[in-house]
Image 1 (tube, rainbow, N blue to C red):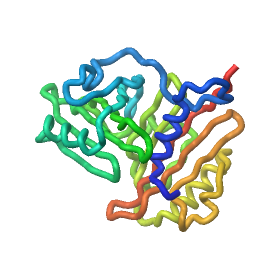
Image 2: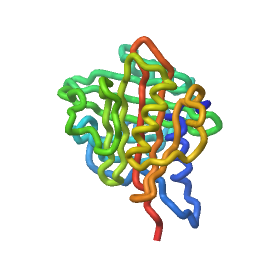
Image 3: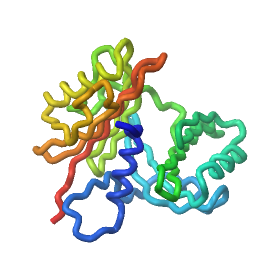
Image 4: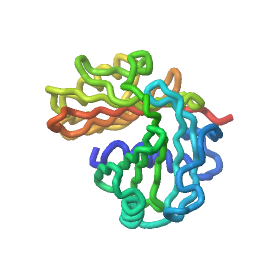
Length: 245
């Protein structure tokens, strides 16, 4: 794919959220959670924003809550305001995105992910308070039916219980992106997933694919990064597609 797969995931979510009448299917993966702390920046003390939705999740098997806000300022200005507010935080910048980790007094970490999608305004802000004792992904937390390559190192597993959606990541070493796309495709085909486009027709160009499964009706998004010194990063997002009555 020409764009990073996480942008495609978010685009699907945004389009599914639009209040359009007569939709046949709902791809909306989030619900109206209510538990947890006050959403980050709820009172607009850092920048103008509006709470978009909140969802109770399980992060590596630990129950947490994720809040998503719409930030009503340009991406560059929002990043500048975050850096000013959290000058000692850890920042990791990407193409149109920035990840912030700010240690809290109680030992937890405030994790913020700010992302700008080309042609879509406002900016999206994901916020989550990660507890100090959050451990690596236990084997029991890995969703059934989502393959992982032999020898790969599991990353994060984010489950959305109310919607039956899962997001997982892992890192594979000693393989190219093309090899990883091919191997993951073969394993997903074995699990009953079918490609929805022709992205994987040329694995040397593909960086992901959209899959679907008819029984039960589900959608899956596969993303594979380019080779780095740390290996190839693979992300998988899947959820049921519910027919509207």
